[in-house]
Image (cartoon, rainbow, N blue to C red; front, side, top):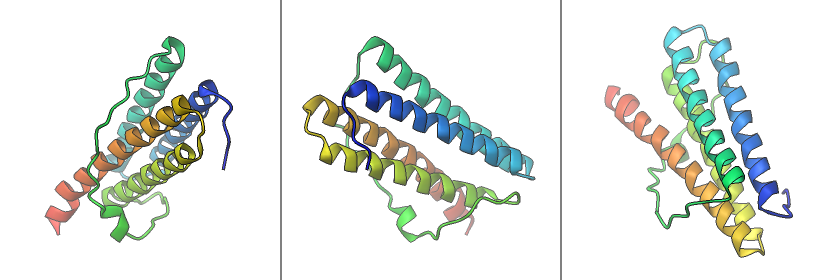
Length: 151
């Protein structure tokens, strides 16, 4: 697992991860044949762009709002099989892919935070993990509202 020397390195890494998520969702949008799925992936990419912009502001301004908030985990991803991106991917598969991606990011930041010695670095990584858990919850709620109610 990657080791960071300071908060700037963490922010640079997180900004890069957000950009990778933007690129990923835009690629999926470009590959999708369904207009609705394209739209969904563009929305996901826009949300990741906002997260990247927020991290960039934190890096430039040096201010970080830390929260003790606990984010609910619906644990939907625990019961879903992994999906691979395909051009004919539907809304359900798109949500599963997004939930799994956010869960992986949450776990990565949580592991990095547990390994951090510097309290400021630990707090930043915990904050990034919290943000990823919020993203996952958003997709889980969408999945619950749309997919579960349809079935």
